Image (tube, rainbow, N blue to C red; front, side, top):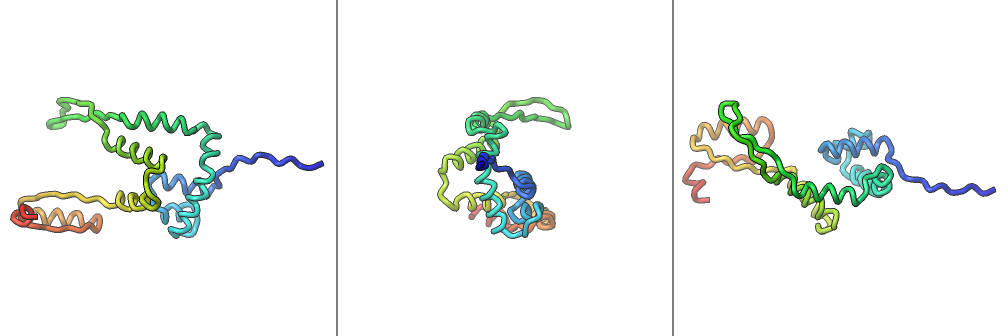
Length: 171
């Protein structure tokens, strides 16, 4: 008697699950592959992400994370609000509900990715840009500006440019 072929629902391997968890916590491809026990190479990370992506629809449906459910949650995130507290000397004087722009912008990005609005390769560029942040701080006192630059350079390797006020006004 011939054996019946069972419909096998794909499951993530333990390494794939560790990889996915690390990525959800913000790890880079190299960090996630190392955490999961794979060779810590970017190419290996791409391969693991592809395998997970192929399994994801069936896995998500099995546990109730349907496209409809994601869509409803995404719709809620597009209208996200947050409460800002205004305090003086540690005493909250006022609160105000405002648009949660960070959450909303990430929701828009998720929606655009889901609909394939980005050209192939744009997602990687966007991630690389998201890993870099630019902050412009104007400090009137040059000594204080130099101390601030030194403090920041001890934590990260930013591109720091100290300009005097005349330079800042012209460009």
